[in-house]
Length: 430
Ligand SMILES: *Cc1c(COP(=O)(O)O)cnc(C)c1O
View (cartoon, rainbow, N blue to C red):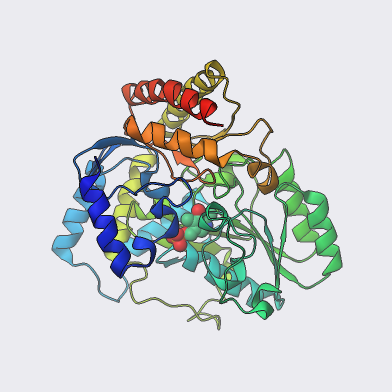
């Protein structure tokens, strides 16, 4: 079992730190050896030992159509024939910017970059320039990529590995970032008052995905909107996960709150590297070459990535898409709930649309503190029991799982059946 994955992991660790190019892939928090993946089609991935899994990672969010979606493959094939990069403007960049602007009225103008990290990093620079202020307010357990100023009480791999904020970030830099508990509007209020006219932006994952899925409390986003406006602070939604995931127009459409700046990534690249940040014209005019805020990229707006993104968005725009994702995921989560209950394994399942997390705790999960009441040892047992039964979940308690349009009712039933046993194993473990 996993013979080739094991030997590749040995080889990888000699040449690549930890054997991986992004930390959570290494399975550190759940133990064992990561599976090296050879191929993916529809809802399934196949590892180098020929084992097939129903996949709920979806490349960490981008693959909302599933693996190897025909429309995306066709778009990529056509673009490869034309060329892969020109370092000059192309028609498709304009089309993608238009499609994003139509879906996200807050993003009148957008700048395409290569990753979510670049998007939030660049948007922070822009917010600081536009407001003439330096301080950033973020939320504990939210992750906005690995730029220095945002690596304070960050989620995702930092939470998974239980790391303190990263060494290598000058204290002067992180001192300009204040992190407060998610869903705690009173503390936001206090901090904005304390640093009167110093806070350039409040950045938030409107539905958190990087401490596991955590929903905004009723009115939280609306109150953030009101408070930031009162303080002349920009409100920035990091919709790198939620954009085109929980609704075509993301969290800002679902919760009807219009931020000043928004970041996208993941889905808009259809599985290729892309990010985007945008806002209204008055703010975006500050970006070079129109304005003085410098930001650039050799491969920004890359033709292949843009083609895959456009093909993905065109599929998502078809009627019934989000209804289907909603009903598939609701069915799955109901089955998981029943399985956990039958196994007497206390869990909380948080879900919005097709993103969800099973937390191994009896306490409702509303912020990073409550997320961390989860029994991560139990999660590890559950994760491996599922993996052995052909179900590939994110190898960390503090991540979201994703259902794609390629998942079938049969996939979901197989997943629920596996979970019935896996929850029993997890419940017995501690
Ligand atoms: C994934 C993610 C990022 C970082 O995107 P990368 O493409 O990994 O750099 C930023 N913000 C959120 C909310 C994310 O989920």
